Image (cartoon, rainbow, N blue to C red):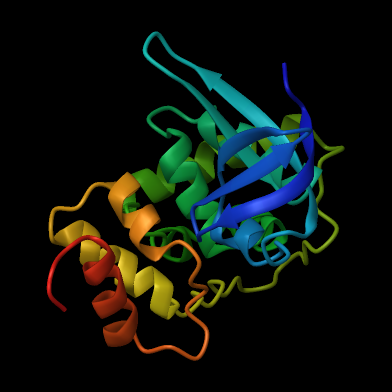
Length: 206
């Protein structure tokens, strides 16, 4: 079992990161909250991890803190909640906010998570509150009893993210898109300029 990775950040988006550990690149699914803590590519990073093994794939997930990893474990233990939905919850609320929201039984707040309806919100709160009651040792450091949880502001997409989305929507593969945009960081560049340069690399007119 891989419990953590310590290495160099190769690249990252709001939902994934690639970490080079002694020459081996590990791709991890991450939450928006963890993405916000990452250094720029080339920087040193440590992520706490969980691996999900299925018949057709092995997927690694990374977290900025042990508390976030523990909350991920609690979330995926809820019936009907998979890793993607768990990461969506952790992208909307910090661990402390989520803990406070559950203890306050705020199903309306839980329903603000993309992909979570009223019934799922109620089930999440019911099962998580029961889990927290059994595990009294787990109280996130930033949890404030009675506090109304506010969603974490979504990070504004960068020009490079917008250009990547545009290329994918045109039918280019993720591999072609990565090659076309390699070397660009999107800073001080318009989406139109990035897209034009990428299309030229792909042998198309801008």
